[in-house]
Image (tube, helix red, strand yellow):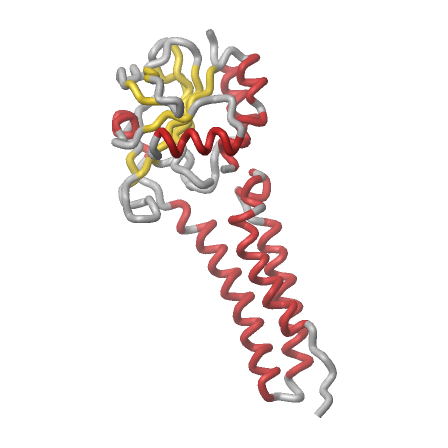
Length: 137
Length: 111
C-alpha cells in the first residue's frame, strides 16, 4: 500500500488559511491591498487550484485521501465566500451618512482628554484634521 | 492600525500644509497612550469614552463594537475657524481615506 505522496492535500488547505488570515493580519495595512483584497483572493484561488489538483490525484485511489481532497477544495471555496462576504457586503453595514454633521456647520465646543490627559477643545480655530477612529484597523 | 500609521507616515506633509492632526477614539486615555507609543505617533489620540463628540457629529454606530457596544463610524473631518470645512464618511468601514487624498483635499481648501 505504498501510495505516492500527495503534497497538494495539505499544502492547499494551509495556503487557503494563510490567504484568509493574512488579509486581517498583514495585507490590510496597505490601502491598495485593503480596499479590494486582490492579493488575498488571488492566494485563495491558487489554494483552490492546488487542492483541486490534490483531489484529482487522490480520486482514483479513493479512501480518506479522496475525502481529504473534497474537504480541501471545500475549505478554499468557503474561505473565498467568507472573505468576499466580509469585504463586499458586511463591511458596508454603516449607519446613514445623513445623520452626520454636514460641511459648513459649527463644531460644538467639546473638550476631550488626549493620551497624556490634557484637555483639548475640538472646536478648532486652526486648520485641523479630525479623525474618528474606532480601533484595530 | 493602518489608518493611523498611514497618517503618521505623512505627518511632515500634514504639518507643512499647516494642518494639525487629531485622532478621536472611544478607548480610554491609557489605552490611547499605549497605541500612540506603540505606533510611534507624533499626533495625539483623544479619548471619547462617553461618545460625546461622536454623538455631536452624529457618528454613533450602535452595537458595532466586538462586545456589542457602540463606537463611532469611521469619519474624517477638516475643521477650521470652528467650522467643518470638508468631510469623508466612508460607506465601508474597511476603507478609509488615504493620506494622499486628505492632502489633496487640504490643498484644495481656500484659506
